[in-house]
Image 1 (cartoon, rainbow, N blue to C red):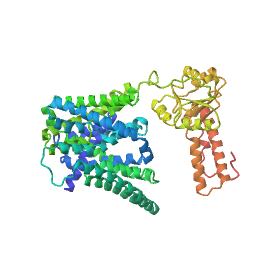
Image 2: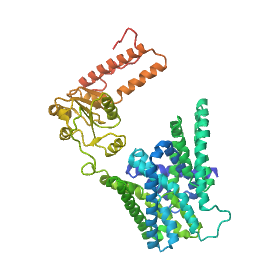
Image 3: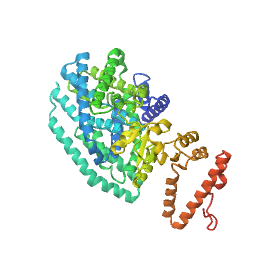
Image 4: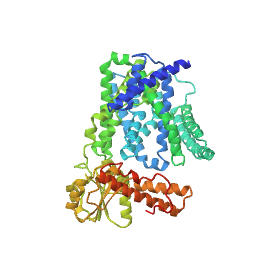
Length: 584
């Protein structure tokens, strides 16, 4: 038994590694690689690994862990802020998509209205296990776009209980003795949520505080996994969503001092189990059902994607989203979801659909999941086209500001905040529409545009400002641009954010007041704090800092003259500074 499990593990991990690397290289994402790898090793192709259902049962813990980690990112205050998106956007998406897809199933498959509804409602759900990692890897989970997508997915998890209740109400099977009615399931949901909230407040926090005081890191791993699995087990015992239970547990620990430790401990398990989940989905793909009715499966998958994309885009437009992000949201949520397999099983047990139909629509869900990376890749140019030109974002204009900050990322925000703190009026420019939208939620007015263009700078009032601060990342600002800026706006004092030492060397002849490496000062501050922590007195710290800065300046000069990054190596600090030696 152990030998067979080891053999299955080696095969699954080997094929997953090969296919995921290939699909990542092709820009198609890891999910599709896992799905194809599972289909290839599964019983219907090479037959190398079997018992996909058992592996799916274990792998579903990956979804549970994923929702726990998402919960850790959302403290209750932030979750309360998202209530409109959760209960308005989410409700509209689930209800409208569910009814529309049920209508398509009724028309195309010839099902009874009850059976069409039992299939259409699950197809309205999207894949949390696929969408959230895509948002995380793109760094968009905490943006307004990502929060809307997450809010809809969260409502979909909440809607599983009502859907099970609807399927039970439509059931043609004999009544199960002692089965709880739908209203009782709803009451269980409320009680379970209240119980988990109370447990998080009065049991989990003291537990993690105790473990933190003991300093036993391994116990954090045990406690984190216990928290996730226990909350999921409680929900499963009540017939509710295990992922929802883990999410609530995460939210309750989101503002605890142990959040980052928990994330670091749980994330490796999440990654492995989520990969296994998609492998299992690929293994369970019924290729015989697709081979028998290929046009039906492909046609239903395409109609499902088109219907959900169109409806979600219309909802987004109704909520005053621009059409490009509304389209992106529709495409991102257009696939069927993993909970569809669970609800199809309920519909089959309720004698609403035949087992063959459950296999067919399971294949539709899997095929729709496989299309998402392609859809997002092929529509990238449409979705990412500049939206400021006629799409609601304001172009720069002269507003009488004394300073012009180009680039409103983490660097530019700090610069602008300090200037504003001294009563200096600031005009802000950035070319990332998402950054502009996010800044707007904090009350900052950021104009859209490429701040390295002279015509746009002139339009923004650079000719009348005292300060011109380029805070854009990487090496977007070069010597030629700065010469042109000085000629066009001679009265503006120019400052530049430099990426690293090489950037500083390239800017050695540029006409500017100063260039500043983006991590230099924060690194110096950290070093000062570290020296103070180990007992170095303030005068000695100041002397060390001054010596380092003096040597760094000399090293930069040598590198700039020679054009060689090793030219200034003699100025590196390689040992303890003597008391009488360097004074900076």
